Amino acid sequence: MELLMMLDSTHREQLTAHLLALNREDRADRFIGTVNDDYVQRYVNGIGYARDVLIGALQERRLIALAHAAMYLEHGELVSEVGVSVESNLRRNGLGKRLLHAAIDAAKRFNVRRVYVIFRTGNAAMAALTRSVGGRINRQGTESSAVFEINGGPHLPLRTTRNFQGAEALHATHPRERGRALLVHGAGGDSYQWLPSSQPIMPITQHDRAPPLAQVRVSRWLRTCCWFRP
Image (cartoon, rainbow, N blue to C red; front, top):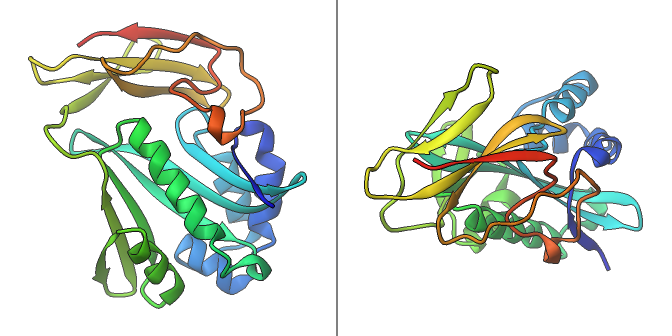
């Protein structure tokens, strides 16, 4: 049985090995185009480990499948783009669906407004997978996207600012809304995490190996942090 767990920068070698093991066609599906080994290595090195959500399926210590949810702002809303990859001999057993569900659930906990999955229009397997999880499919030529609206209701218009050290802080721009922006100094660099005021505040922890998925709460792999109120 595969173990699903959150990954961090200590899993960089396993992430690289998993993505390099994808054949030419699978890489094209995962990265929406043909990519070489150097591109894969740069991709792994460029992951925002203190900002993004990475969920892996492991058999013993070998990474056999991955969901990477990259977080970013879109028109003042926190959104995520998810990429999923599974070893070819382990497909059609529901593993990709479990990973996508886990990535969407994590995004909900972090108050992400919307999740996207971008894929090649000819990738029928990904179209079927995202549709089965409730995605709305949009086709645009050779690329398609599945959209998941996961946190409805009034949203907090957000913006980022930088302090004199160049670190980012996230602020709500609506005068009647309150929340907190967590400025994280992690192994992947400075990043932020928006937390509504109803979210529990977790204690600061030392950067360490990622816990199993069931143990993950709001704060992840933090070394130092500071709080801001809008």
